[in-house]
Amino acid sequence: MSIVDSVEYLEKLKDFFYRLLELNDRLREAGLPRLGPRPLPELPIVVDLSHPETGTIRVKIGFPAMVKHGVIMDVTNEEQAKIAEEAGAVGVMVLDKLPYDVRKAGGVARMADVKAIMRVMESITIPVSAKCRIGHYMEARILETIGVDLIDESEVLTPVDDQHHINKWEFKVPFVNGARDLGEALRRISEGASMIRTKGEAGTGNVAEAVRHMKIINREIRILMSHVDDEEFIRETARKYQVPPELVWLTARLGRLPVVNFAAGGIATPADAALMMWLGADGVFVGSGIFKSEDPQTRAQAIVLATSYWDDPETVVEAQKMVSESKAMMGIDIRKLKPEELMQLRGV
Amino acid sequence: MVIVAGVLALQGDIEEHVQALDRALRELGVDYRIVLVKKVDQLSKIDLITIPGGESTTIGFVSRRTGILDKLKERIENGLPTLGTCAGMVMMAKEVRDAVVGETSQPLLGVMDISVIRNVFGRQRESFEVDLKIPVLGNQPFRAVFIRAPAAVRCWNDAQPLATLRHERYGDLIVMVRQRNMLACAFHPELVLDTRVHRYFICEVAGLVQR
Image 1 (cartoon, rainbow over the protein chains, first blue to last red):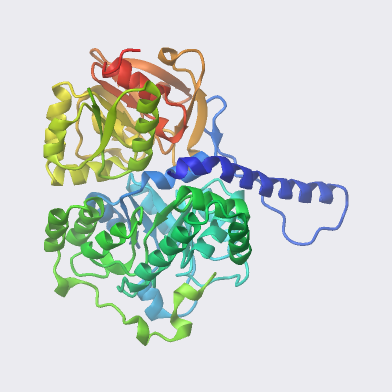
Image 2: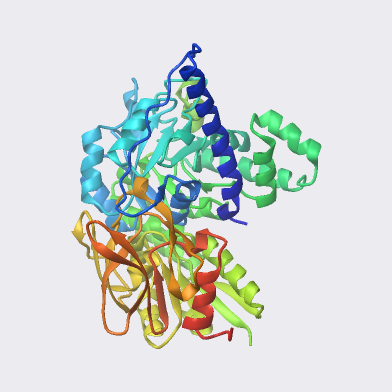
């Protein structure tokens, strides 16, 4: 089963949230006091055709399907973006600082410079993603308005809401969210995420946490699959995960996440990328691993090759031979990080 | 005879292509096998191939690096039935440029007499689905999903446009085109459950099944 089989249920879920928004509007019009912010008007999108539908579920979960078996690379400027494109990246993620530098710099990490993102969009042909802070509706609206192809509501930046994520159903642009386990992944999907990635531990050059998160998600899906006809178990799990039981049941039937699932957090070598693909990732994000190394051009090419040919040992060896361990980013031992320095604990 | 259907499995929505072929071949009621094509020696063992949607720059880079690009080009020129969707259409085109960046120097198969503009409708937020009239598939429109899609602005020799969309800036854009053993779509027939495009490819373009 693939994500094509998720469309029908995700459309129902989206309708439910739209009906809630409409109800809110009707109550306001009726003069009833409603607290809290109201959604901004929809982004007017002009496609020069008769009757096209934009921002549909198929279009939103279809986009991540097109980057599968590929590598999305973190970049900070258009020179790096061009290196990524020429190396065969399926997309770039524009940041102000690479996660490793975010960690070193401390302070508040925010969305990248809008002008820098726009310069990258004008210089390459592949999709451009950018990160917004967890819960920061306005940063997300800005990214959508300037035309970013995929928004990462990311724990690498400093969260602005420790209780809630953005309601992503309201946007026409797809979102990707991080997850450490199946509950987190399904909560994000129920909020409208069109793509999931493991959180890992960004900016460490250590793939251990990404491995752990991918294995946890896989194990939890296997447990669900063995209870696909067990109504009580599905309901209990839904209660535990705080998501609709239908979403849990869909996952049990599909035997995979209902949307595309990438690996992220600490991937630094071709072998790391191949390992994550072997564990069942649909593709990989590489953050600091490329542009914090001393051989970014060849390392980028090698990671692309290893991601595509992860199941062919000879090609993975060839890819690994392209890079030198002495040029890899140094990396950080996760056990030496204090609990407050762990990014993965943000936004659960 | 067992039909061996290949999916070029380097990058993109490979699994969706496998499933779409599986649905179509099952509906046609023939014996078949679907293989993921990654290596040169597999090319001689398949009866048809589909090239998935994805990023054409990535598929081009990886296929050139591993040498499958030239061999696949040779096989297609010698008659291997080929369906390319989105990035697949870009790979098959002889002329390609990007709507924003202009000329690109990406590696291509360059087998079809079509001139393609990448990202012609805009960015992801402009991605859309629409009911598309495809006369060769009958009167019922096809739900066509366009994701950062390309389209052909021109085709020549025996390349035949099968579906077009009217665009304000570019005029009639060709979104489905056939040339001999080759079929290219700017949209993603693998993202819907309707198998008509795939059945048309298997029966009419590849001529592997009599309808």
